[in-house]
Image 1 (cartoon, rainbow, N blue to C red):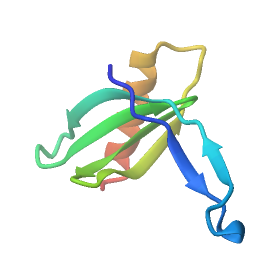
Image 2: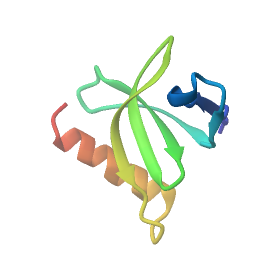
Image 3: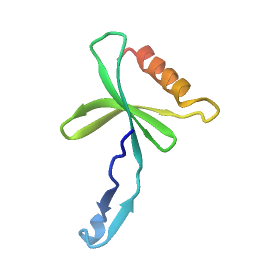
Image 4: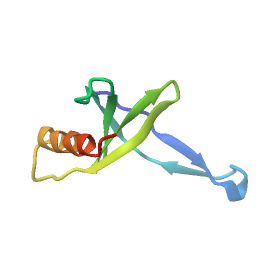
Length: 90
């Protein structure tokens, strides 16, 4: 699993003079194909959330998110998340 870099945002009220650090640790999980065999989604984990969406040259477009239930394994959480996405019917 790879890590995405930390991002830094600028405070608009001070024209960027003061930095506000947003520490996010995103872990790349992988890509998966939905049952329709036409939709390829990328999944990452950000803290207690699983996030899935399409990717472009600008990065991940966050389309779906799922709160991880720590009482289950990550594989069980991912399977439940994928089932929920497929039920929504894209």
